[in-house]
Amino acid sequence: QVQLEESGGGLVQPGGSLRLSCGASGSILRINAMGWYRQAPGKERALVATINDGDDTNYADSVKGRFIISRDNAKNTVYLQMNSLKPEDTGVYYCNGRIRSSMTLRDYDLWGQGTQVTVSS
Image (cartoon, rainbow, N blue to C red):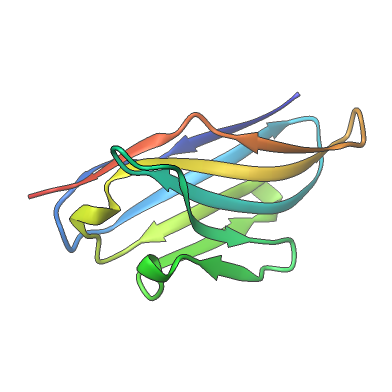
C-alpha cells in the first residue's frame, strides 16, 4: 500500500512564503507525475502545479513566477515553494501522485489528506 502525506501548511501574512512537502511511502516501484492542487472555500479543487518524471513542470497562471514545484526522487518527496503569497492563495492544498506499486505493478492515482494554507494579515 502506498500513501501520501503533506506537511508545511500554516498561517502566513501577505507577501510571505511557505514550503509544502509531500512524501510518498509504502510499496513504491516508481513515481510518475506528482502535483499540488488547492481547494479554496466554496470552490472546486484546482491544479496549482505538476512535475513529471522528466522534471517538466506546469503551473496555474495565477501562481506562475511565485511558486516553484520540485521533487527529490531519493526521498520520494515533492515540494511546493510558495513565495509572495496572496490572500487568494488561501485554501487546502492537496498532494497528488501517480505511483506504480511494487506489489501489483499497477499505477495508482493517489491523494494526500490535505494541508491548510491561510494567507491573512
